[in-house]
Figure 1: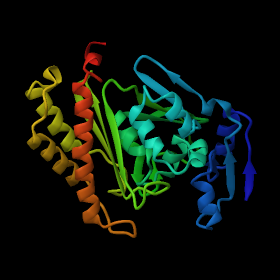
Figure 2 (figure 1 turned 60 degrees about the horizontal axis):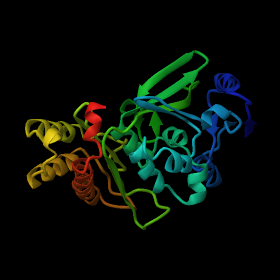
Figure 3 (figure 1 turned 120 degrees about the vertical axis):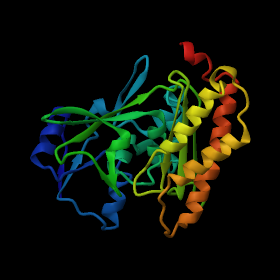
Length: 296
């Protein structure tokens, strides 16, 4: 196994172009586990830790451009206001040591259906910035995942950053595991209210071959909020609305039975999480978190 260690971004792109099978490594929290258990034996490792720009971020009026190498701890400590859903998801990742090393870029590169960042990225509305010596493109996060641990990157591309909409309303993340910490999700759910556009987005993890959005549930809830005048009034939601939203979220799942849980349990748990997180986000909206953003 050869170890490639570029000193900068252009050098990293050149190395990836010359060695398309090279596996990028930054935090190493996924890659090293696979190597240590002999599940993976790449010909080349591409160490990106010396590429300083990957550990930076930029906040604009409407988005955050998050470098692929920004660790979870920095998101929790410094981007909670702009990316609350992702910060909540980051809190559930592994141990403090893993959160200090692990990155959203690495989570996306692994493309696991159970990746903790993925539901929050889907709910917030994110685009993956992919780059190669041929140029740069933006991939909507819902189009990034193409199968179990498969993604839309070309062999010569690297993830440079993730562009994420700044929160203009409440966001929530919930995760079910077999214990309270350091656990792979049995299933996970994220929801984000977007008052500026009067839309709702969701993200579901570990309940389908890829992370998915519950689009029918989003359309139902968005329609119910608009038709009932809830965005303006902030009135309590009828239990029937929350119940139907939960049913549609559960229906968006395509889970399997495995050692961590059954398909039936996953589907049921997603419905429960959808109902609860909707309650939390709507209560926050009613208390003013997001209602003023409509005219910001």
